[in-house]
Image 1 (cartoon, one colour):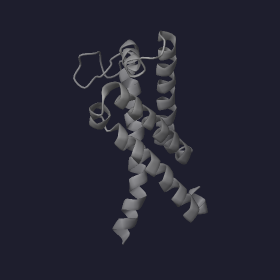
Image 2 (cartoon, rainbow, N blue to C red):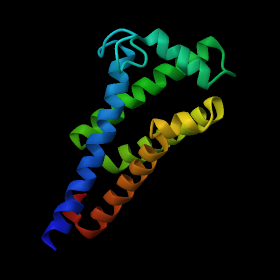
Image 3 (tube, helix red, strand yellow):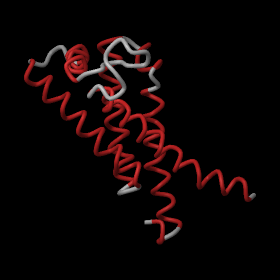
Image 4 (tube, rainbow, N blue to C red):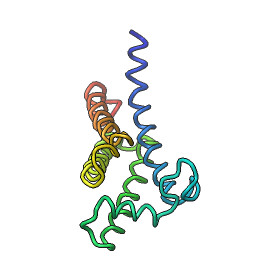
Length: 147
């Protein structure tokens, strides 16, 4: 019984950390912090490459709107990553993360087909974010201190 309680307490924290790490790592890659393009494990290596990818996902947008979308996604991932990492407004951050990830998954599926969002576990991350938002709601209902 105690191990089940420990797991139920650890799972939301693990989900928060995983989502935060994913968001912040992607942002770091956009700014070349993981190394230049061509370095193993680096997807973008710079913001220009990231904007090229954004244009691939959103081909119907003008260059200006692609830049706006790229920056908006970057700001959102940074804010949500930090909020999840430090535990600020977790339910709201988790819900917003789920919406953001669901948007990414749909855009990737339409533009690239189903393999890319499945291989990058975007659908899974979105589901995890929504579960985290629900978990926080349940925890808040059970204990006023958890709010």
